[in-house]
Length: 138
Image 1 (cartoon, helix red, strand yellow):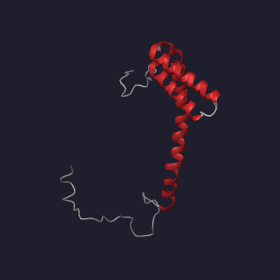
Image 2: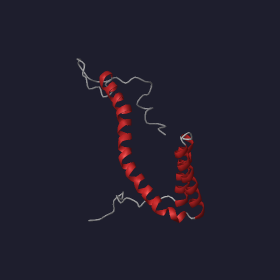
Image 3: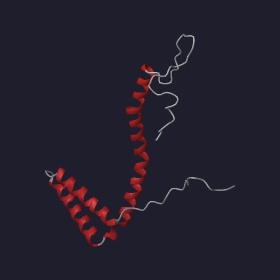
């Protein structure tokens, strides 16, 4: 059987981000947490130490952050598989379902409800005649 399909269903191997950028992100998040909890000196000291440590390691020896980078990358892939269907489901329920219910309740675009009459022919309204309808299509 030929395997000449239009699409391949092989998932590409994703590469994790560079260790240096992961270190910068962790340093920035630690600094932001330290700024948020600046009144608690214990939390501030821990966050400042973590931020300085991550910044120092990511600038001097980013290869040390490789295990943390891989764990964080795998966690983000797992989180995306959980969160994406939830967010898309909420968007569908909030945006598409109400529109469909309104359309079903007050509009009949397919003209499924038949009226009593001698014919079901729909008269065309407009200026186009048969000779003009096929010219200058594009």
